[in-house]
Length: 516
Image (cartoon, rainbow, N blue to C red; front, top):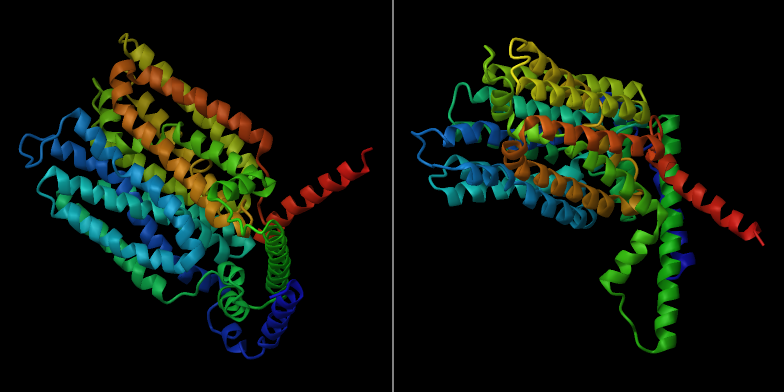
């Protein structure tokens, strides 16, 4: 097919799509508003993400029970660190697999497919009677979390209106916080086996809820399914003037991208025919060309630094070893570490709820600066307290470490915890969104694994004071970097964000042509 034929077909499909507007008026006249339908579409993602939070928080209640003398599975410190961190390596691998699955089969189908083994993994954990099956269940649930981690924010960003997108994306951390809280709360009343059964219900609910909602309009457009994309877009967003303009801009952008892709393929065919070799492009060459694109490498670098800052702020070290860390930090006080754990979990949940509102009202940049700076200050405060506490100078001030933990959890949860997930669904252009999200979330889980695997060992060697100081320094450095380079995406459509890269690239090219 020639470029002109391809563009003509795309344009014809776009015109047919516009003519179908009257036929789809029954969707527009539905008794439910577009916002309500966007909430319905997000239910499956919500249930699944809550189970992701349960996977993250599960080790905090599992390890103390396994270390109890009456446990049928006994663990030492080394094995305990592996049980906590073993789910994270398959998470990183799952993120890379997600890049292919999302592009090949769609966002919705990827979520549907992964909820099945997710439920099976929790069942395996529940029925485990030896270390092998326990670790296998953790690996399987970790892999599913990895695939779903980039898929969920991408689907939510592509189904939501620009003014509500921040809320939906910030709700991811709310769901994770709720999952962590539910897991820790259930530990009061049931054993780790029963807890795992409850955790397995959430992916099952997610599968049922996702079955009845449409596929991402952006993915359908990328596959040139114009009519299906328009139908999904109208179901989700209605058909007011602003929504119609946004959809038309998406169609126009897809036409241009298809033309550019066809031109590139035509040039490659000409080159191959001229050489007479029929040369195949090596995947390494394709990756090198991909990294050379500013619209890919710029968000890749920004989000990688953001996720590294998040993980080395110690957020997940605290979640995975909450009871252990609080027991050491509150030793010699009258505060029960399990009660303190639930208090911090509740604060994390409330802060995540606040973040859903704040992200919708405030920009990404000011929230990053406030949250990152405040988190670093809290970490330095905890470090200072523990250094004095080691000398028995502050043993009578039991409320200080708990207050610092609460403030740390609050300021981190309203900013640098939800924002990188929000930006993952926003910064990458559509043609790079799947592979870019896969790369940065895989990097995130590698950092996640590094922190969680090394935390118990380094805390025992260097103590909490030096570790919190180390986390504080890295958080401060990352915040300074993000202050300098992070773009603002609040209230911008995904197409406007993508066009921003194109405009900058064209401006740079024209400026280079003017120079002698």
